[in-house]
Amino acid sequence: MALRVEELSSGYGKVQVLFDISLEANDKSITALIGPNGAGKTTTLLSIMGVVKPWRGRITFNGNDVTYMPPHKKVELGIVLVPEGRRLFPNMTVEENLIMGAYIKRARQHLHDSLDYVYTLFPRLKERRKQKAGTLSGGEQQMLAIARALMSRPSLLLVDEPSAGLAPKVVSELLETFKQIKENITIVLVEQNVSAALAVADTGYVLENGKIVLSGPAADLLESDHVKKAYLGV
Ligand SMILES: Nc1ncnc2c1ncn2[C@@H]1O[C@H](COP(=O)(O)OP(=O)(O)OP(=O)(O)O)[C@@H](O)[C@H]1O
Ligand SMILES: [Mg+2]
Image (cartoon, rainbow, N blue to C red):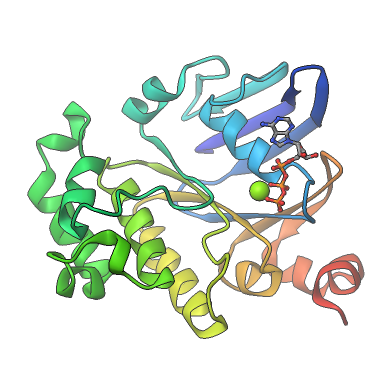
């Protein structure tokens, strides 16, 4: 088990958002976390990353307790978050953004291999490597945000709503690349696009009001009455 979250509670100030949530992500698999607006999906990723401090519970990564480890230490350990909204450097080129992703010591040594790897995954970024990030299309910017995270050579990639604001065709193309990424890396994918997310995921969890209400193999969730009714409109 690459990531294990046990009975995690957290929130902001006095407001509790997550209530004893437990989830696991297998090594080199895709785990989808789905749920409605405000359910606590982003808070879950921020708590795993250590940006939001857990109140209670335990987070283990490759067997190590990382519950209260600060975010920069987690990056060194191989956990990286692609946040909602991408946060690129718009006036820097594609390649400069990528190089920024390899700032940690462990990654810097492998800069050229990492560039080759992300350019193979996303040939469009290679074509546009001298272009300013701010001039890319929405889909390309999301590719760049993911590629930049990969430059830190993570073993666990947390991705928050990569499909937000993208056209359906771009969404499926983007999510399909996670299948290639998982050959090397464990992925936790937060998505509002439930059908597309469960189509590429191995396992899924449904989060509602800060609680896990359903989980299982992604294919089973796609067939479950609850998911169909609440998220797929069928
Ligand atoms: N920085 C913050 N301070 C206070 N409350 C917050 C903060 N961020 C989020 N919340 C609240 O925490 C709850 C969960 O928010 P969160 O962003 O985790 O949900 P989400 O499932 O990611 O939703 P969405 O699908 O809209 O991204 C919401 O009620 C939200 O208003
Ligand atoms: Mg969110």
